[in-house]
Amino acid sequence: MPVPRQSPPEPLSSTARTRRRRSPRQEALSLIESSELVVVPVARYERADQAWKNRITFVEAVGARVICDLKCSVGFPSPHPAFLAVRAQYFGASAIGGP
Image (cartoon, rainbow, N blue to C red; front, side, top):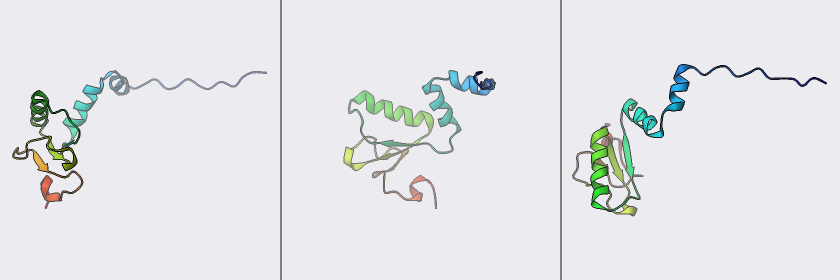
């Protein structure tokens, strides 16, 4: 008795092939670059001086805004212009430039 066969899948488009080859870092960078507003929630983090500097450098490089959670102490300098709010779960639209 013959076995029914499925037709082969359509070839991937060049866009899909390119996307498949991208590293997670490249994919993240693409998402950040296409975003209107990038918000970085800082919760658990490394407390070393270099890690602190790396967070600041990253936020400044991508033009992000930062929200922190009080339960995890301080993860980003509150006087920094990119700092939005202390509690990640309680901030208003004005904190991100809304009315």
